[in-house]
Length: 158
Image 1: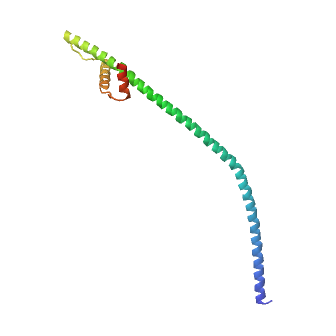
Image 2: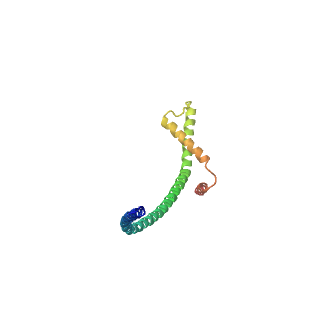
Image 3: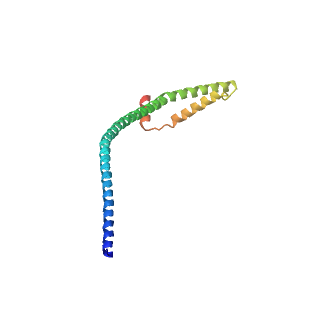
């Protein structure tokens, strides 16, 4: 056997081993591709219903949010109406009550002055009541002269 024949034989054996290894790799690769195909089809079968359910959940959440928006708007309107009503009641009843309290305090002060004993309120409750009445009178005097509340006050007063 010559060197050329020996080299040819080694190359042939090398190519035979290489082809065999490539055949084994290709067989294993085909198995992996088959399993991947099965896996993808299983995921697709399960993902489509999940996506459908997720879409339904999102639509339901949207409907609930729209309802909450409506409820929030109604509560906000009710709160504004209650605020306007309480301001109107405070304006219509608070002013005369403050005036009566101030008048009664003035009468007590005048009577005490005639008797010669002028005293300021000594009890903490009386002082707080007097301070509250003064603050209410100041608020009523500095209330805005225009706007919805002022128009309601003018309408109530006649």
